[in-house]
Image 1 (cartoon, chains in turn blue, green):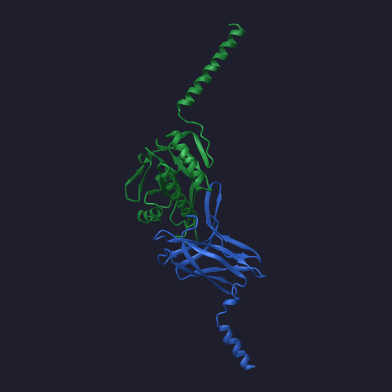
Image 2 (cartoon, chains in turn orange, brown):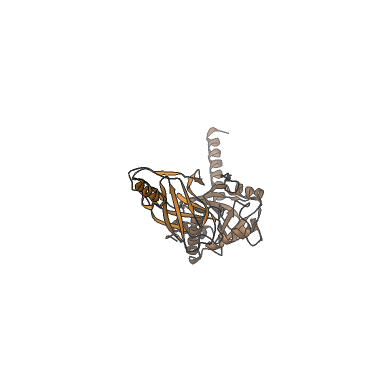
Length: 142
Length: 206
């Protein structure tokens, strides 16, 4: 019995990547290449909840940025506006496109130039993290 | 005067007025050009005298909008989504127009002079094209120009004093070689349609 307790304690100290953000996937993530010295960049992709329970992305972090938030661009009365949109909850089976002119990851306080490089982001959910690797590139249409 | 005579005089007067109106319309040079991506003003509108600076430190005023067609877009460099999307579109448009011998000057107006220093604005705008002009200035001058261009923008506070954002008009403003507002293009902006419209306007209105 004591041995079992010890095992449970040991297991709880290990990272559990397979159980984190259960059901959540980020498909084809990418970061828009930005002018050198840009203080803010934008990340895109498609968030999908393949699980059977709602998943909430509480926050996001990255070693390359001081602050990361989910924002939404929208147009109303001929005006472009941008507002914070996290925490973001996806119902089972729901997907959210992060795309230019809509939802996007607002990557603030850029710590180093990211021209044609890669960046790592951690999406934090209640049960752990989802790690995502983002290539930095110009949009395909340009 | 008999009723018949009065009627004839009235009809002649009406015809004369109509003829005068037609002559005035044709002389004002505003042809009715149908465009698919925006609106051309029937009567181009003057821009009140303004003075901003470009990123090289030179004066950017009404004179810089004369002698050629210009497209103006208001934004700010802390805008990582819509502004780069529009500037990248404008880069594609400029390439297309240049190869069609339709020179149009592209101007990015920063409505966030507090954060957009000339150096920051220059790196940002010239990343898209060295031909693009970045301009900004005092709040008073920017507001004056925005009013003339019928553009609106408004600072929206964020969670920290530095993290504010700026709501801004999404339209591109077309300025004619006389330095007057000639029309507006509204999003979604598509290079093909914009290029076709601009070539037509420039060809027909010179």
